[in-house]
Length: 204
Image 1 (cartoon, one colour):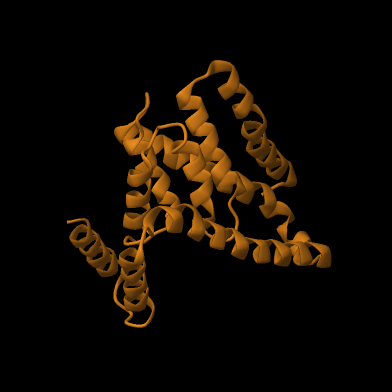
Image 2 (image 1 turned 135 degrees about the vertical axis):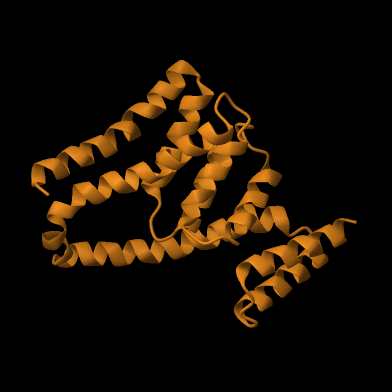
């Protein structure tokens, strides 16, 4: 791939980041704001899909597009299925209470969250061999990786911990699920199902 194509891809990556917020503010369109938020989440994530969780929540929950309970339920279900956590965006697009929902909303959200990574990959590929050999780039990436650990802990605390752990029973259920997953090596889909059953029993 030519360097010119790489530069063009990076420009295409940057343009929505610069233009979509202004368009969303000027048009007051929930659809544009949703696409902007999901695209921005896909563009800013680094180090794993869980980092995208607070970004997506800030896009859909405060605006009323998705209820916080539905958001957490979808996040829990996403842990039980294989594949990248980015597919969680398709769920949010499908259940969003806006002009675009269902299959169309899911596909639009999926395209919005995966498009930035595709453009960055195409853009950086022609220069990657030279960049990866530079010590300053290696040091910067190591620092970013360390920062991602902090972001993951923040995402675990808010919204997961603050919304799901409301008392000792919730904490015990979460601890039991953690033990089944890490110590017992129980498949994630079974852990999610057992945790859902436990939550239903606690609520009853």
